[in-house]
Image 1 (tube, rainbow, N blue to C red):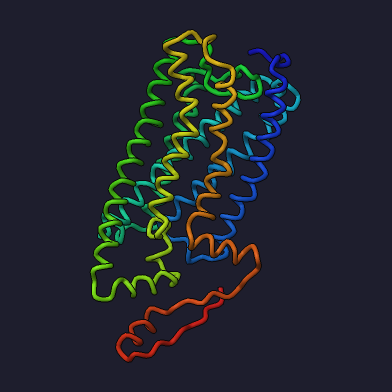
Image 2 (cartoon, one colour):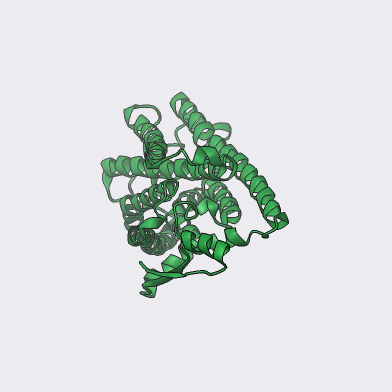
Length: 341
């Protein structure tokens, strides 16, 4: 494994600067997300457990990987020896695949909540913890395999990142990378597209039914402001369709460069792979540490509302008690309860 100063020093310094910025934003974004869920406990619905696990994986990648690659980038060479490269590669694959797994599970959760409501009502915190454990277990399996000889970890051409060694092609690399590509890229993308498409169709149908109902969906609109277990799931929010599409676009754009490199390494000579692509690929994979929390906290109105309450130290929330709504509908009088959270 080479460790001399990289000849691409301008690239390395720019990468180190970008990683430092992303690390700072990601740290703030993920910690804010955790504090919001901890401060407003009613947001911790069963399906939102996946969002919390996604944040943990993003934070893990930020803390365990970014400092090593950023400091090496500023110095122009890898400074943590071969053992550090293996540890970095392990955490990069482990947390990266956990992010992929939880993102795919979020799409499945949205499908269940929108299209299979009877099943959604039966799922508890324990079920979603098991779902998250599947994502973590799958990531651990693929991250450990290179340590035991199925492929290997090594420096990338910029010599400030470590990943699966795609520069020395052999049967071990080909079998590993093809399996990894199918199971952890093609399958999640297909699952996300299918689940979000079906959820979009179902939600559109439900909106049309509400518009055609005698009440015009007024009751449902009033109940949106009630912080109950039934409407705090991200998938149940009006922005669910937009966020589902955003997750798909971001997932493909962040992991496609690595997929292209690995496929090109199998088909072509590795010297034919553009240097710029080898720089973009690890950077794109690290964007999840700050993009994911921003998507959740800023794109979903309910989460955005509670985030603004936290940031601006607002402590009061005007909510509607469901029992008061029932009483108002029957007696034409409503009682509003101001709940302090």
